[in-house]
Length: 295
Image 1 (cartoon, rainbow, N blue to C red):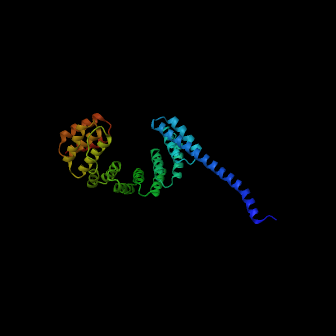
Image 2 (spheres, helix red, strand yellow):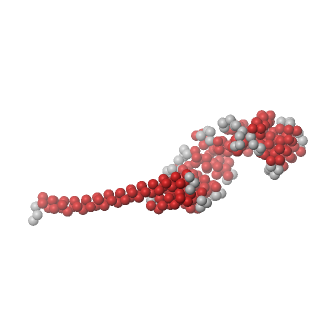
Image 3 (cartoon, one colour):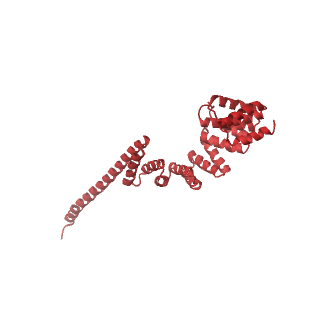
């Protein structure tokens, strides 16, 4: 019979090599996995460099290889999706962006991107689904509320859109795109004072060759006209047309403001200028009818 001490020694001498071999195997596996992830990260980094240079084919190949090596490579899927989208491969792009969203369930950013993609494709229901998913992931994400508001507005749900926009402005009061969208809703509801209050928070307009700035001028003039401040609207629009490029929208707004402020001759001149720029402008018929009705 083997003494207990010797038996323990023999057992240990048998187990130690096995444990060492197992440990070495685990270390080798872990090192191999780390090496693979490192390689995928390097490929993704190079892909980003190519993407920034606009070299889409090379970038796509690198991101594809990164995600093949590491299927749960979140950034690789997201960047690959952006490349595919630029290449016009919209279905594949959305599939990869969805994969990135699954891998980062608590981050609303990828769902916002999917929503924007679906919105560009005109798929409003799918866009809304992803925007709402982004809001659920982070109910403090003003980008998610802004996207949901935009989609709801395009669906005709202006009450819900306005609620989302006001949520955004509560966090980001100088979010220009949302300021303009909110002002448009108030203008459609004939709420000139509220529209003007929103637009007054937009930085002072310097009229240059910038569509957004011209849009601000048009919306401000519409709010002023709703409030009966036609002379103020005329002055604002005169400044705009004198200091910016020829813009039919601004001239139509100016013609209407001048007509309403009792300047029919000037209004006719502004109308002719607008029609010279764009004879088929949708506002031309309405304005001609207004002027034909007499001062």
